[in-house]
Image (cartoon, rainbow, N blue to C red; front, side, top):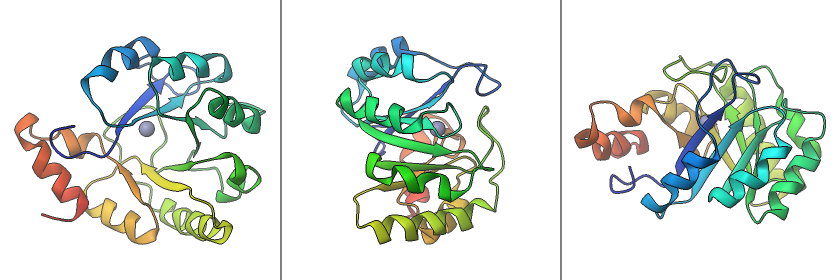
Length: 196
Ligand code: ZN
């Protein structure tokens, strides 16, 4: 994916508790890190999250994103991420409103909208998240802050185009990026960018 033109390596961490699936931990992030010079964007779908933030930071995460729903002290989690020298992201499940981000805008570098219920790859895009993206775009622009707006879940060239139009500036793709095997990666990424 690095050679194929990706901008970031997005890593989905799931714990079998906050979401109904288990993926990887900091050891795998540490093992992957030397294989790409791209920023590692580590999406923690785990609860509790605070005890593990330092482990992912030291494993090589450049951006650590936590879920607004993962615990009672979101602002504390975001501050801990920045204390570890990483950029801080907040993610919202599909049922969480855009307004949940407003009180922590000064503590985030990235907002991640989940356009599927997190837990598994290969799910269909939830349309209502486009309105939420638009609301977040206006909130971020109105704040004058340098905050990236990312979308994750069911992204293909068609949903990606619509998400970008609604205000997303980072598209996360799994299935659409990996389809067809290694020789198709560059073409897949061009299609996601709308350049092919
Ligand atoms: Zn993700």
